[in-house]
Image (spheres, rainbow over the protein chains, first blue to last red):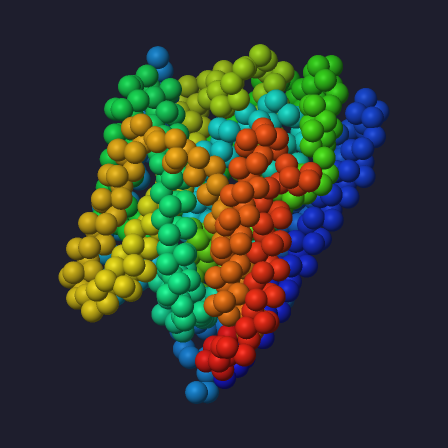
Length: 88
Length: 487
């Protein structure tokens, strides 16, 4: 009854949820951690306010690299067309 | 009046799109499984196609015209908000992911509703789903159609009606004859145009403004809040901006036009590649266009109407031939959204209503004829509606994004991952989600406020729908035989 491919699929869905939590934490942490100061006192990185650079630019690049890593290391290939492990 | 150098790239773009439709039609005519080919492209999409069709379907007129206009007036806070869209690139495919692909094949599902029908064994679920899709997506299609025609009107100086017919003729022909395969292939071209266009415009704007530091300096001199995360008038609170993660990020799972793509890919390699390519492409386009909107402020000050920022900026900072390519991008965004919606509404009527309730034993030639016919009739109906959009339709369109999410997100997600979830939970959750969203959103429209209790109005309805689904499913668990489910 239980398709063994589901175990892999469930694990990958959990990874998806974890990635969103990490993404949100980086985005929120840098934006409001650094951005809540007085805008006139901001420090700048490559011309952008530091909060914006870390939250929206570096954070996004980090997420993309993390996603590539996760896909290469944890995501498994499987066949869709056969009946898989369906023993019925 | 535009220069021909601007119009020429637009014209070439339309011709390419048109040829793809004709090419895809050969597949449709030669396929031995018409429904699967016409409405799902034969489940044959590779990674690049899947990534681009997800990105292009998701990115619409608002990513290229409306969004940058708001960013122009709000500042970097709006770019921050727009980055909540990044999960739409990876989260949707990871969550629906392999489970959806496996189960859709087991159920032989062609549409999202096929999946829901098999999973919940309920005609009521089918009817509520089909009506939500037809009503909401017909109105958003009309709204995008209007946007496309207005854009052609403003770029070429043609009359609105003429512009509408040119736009509609191109889209209708390739969608009707080519089906989903034509939609996906043109989405790849359109997505690439969106990607390249947004990069060119961002670079052009930075150069025109004398570099990032210079532009930031000008923004701070005008109003320091423009470079803060809180918006020019301090209205973007962390809670409000965070709730956009639901509307435009993770809630995207509930959009049928996106979800159906998650069962149309060929194999796991395609899916893995699509997650990476899609996240990069979506991130680049959304970041690029919204940041461009902010940077445009010192370059092109004093624009009153937000929607004019992007076209005017393009013509100011770029040479004509590049401007033509960049202005093809919003056109591509509109077309790639409209074609997906047209395909989806048509598949809902043909597969979920006609073949389900009216004529289950239709022969292949009959199905073929009815599919072409329904797609054409809806397409033409949208044109007539777009000539003079009724106010009910304009009103409905405002609700379509969040409304579809509130209806579908839990029945789809729990349908895949929670055995106890049943039809009673699904039906109650759909109705509660839909009604509470329309009620709350209507309050914000009437009072002219952006939020409910500081949150985007989609937040609470999604939460209500979640609670309803779980509670009702648990209370009615004895009424349903769970052994039949293959999840």
